[in-house]
Length: 118
Image (tube, rainbow, N blue to C red):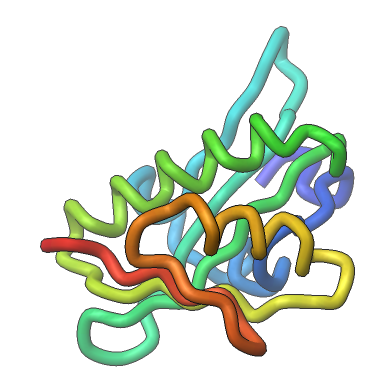
């Protein structure tokens, strides 16, 4: 993935971004003028469950991160995934709390889990 090192995960672990297949429904990139602004991906775990990540160049760009999250969840839903889990770091908790409070099916415990309606 081009310029992936310039991206910082705001939800989940960057490992998922590195290891996810290059399938455009599983890994997507947002660019502007040839510059990578962010990326999101999910990696299937078992059955219809997956682990996800959203990474952006500007960690203050919550709107961009949420846009990537929505697009990634749409792709996961279309692939038959029913649960996406984001393994969180401490710095990711504020954005995860916002997602949990506003996104139907999202819950925050030690990690953020999003249940998708099939």
